[in-house]
Image 1 (cartoon, rainbow, N blue to C red):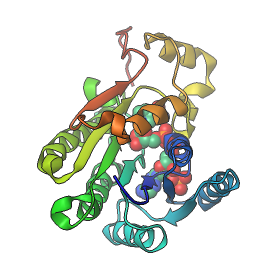
Image 2 (cartoon, protein in one colour):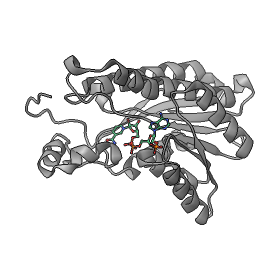
Image 3 (tube, helix red, strand yellow):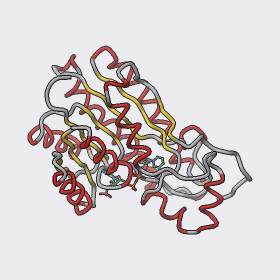
Image 4 (cartoon, helix red, strand yellow):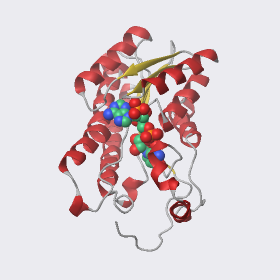
Length: 260
Ligand SMILES: NC(=O)c1ccc[n+]([C@@H]2O[C@H](COP(=O)([O-])OP(=O)(O)OC[C@H]3O[C@@H](n4cnc5c(N)ncnc54)[C@H](OP(=O)(O)O)[C@@H]3O)[C@@H](O)[C@H]2O)c1
């Protein structure tokens, strides 16, 4: 692809998104770091990237809000040029409870952020990247989860379902735009050391039990997820689309039955 490479990373202020923004900036992308609340974290990351000679801007916005998503992409158009890569990393966990105790408002928010947000951002990406829409091509990576493959860990069936929707949408969209110069893939992390897993890591005994369910017996660093994301976006993955790539330390070891 000729011209400037521009990547928008949703949920780029922290965790996997932040590691991805850092990695893509190193790869030569001008990066747009989306955040919802933590403008401080996004600004610090952008400043750090700039101090290393990279190009980075921050764009606030809630991916569950269609007006916010449209404004975010328009802001990137104006400040960096149209996106050539999008990483949908913004995501939240859900009720963290048995289904009998689910709250409808929590479910709605979960699906709005993880599913609707991913779909809206993909729509805006395709409108800019697809050669059928006058674009020059590009690539998208949706951050799913291994939870989609097992119905979620105990108490996370809602989260697992939201990520299964991301997988299905990724495959469908990939086929739709495969001959329009746009590749769409998903990455399915296992458990990663980020703020999202703070709670699970706070109790050493619980942490050890969780690690024992992972064949590599440990959680991933955010960088171990960012690296395959960068690869999926790169020309090295030029014939890969519609794939859901597991980055999970070997998946899950089925252990003792757990109730929530
Ligand atoms: N950590 C894991 O073990 C794990 C495993 C599998 C999959 N994943 C998936 O990986 C992705 C990143 O997770 P993480 O562990 O990096 O999470 P994290 O450390 O909790 O960071 C979440 C990021 O998403 C942003 N965000 C949340 N809601 C948003 C919204 N409505 N609009 C825009 N941005 C929003 C946050 O912005 P603010 O900083 O402004 O709050 C933050 O940048 C998620 O999709 C998650 O489901 C994580």
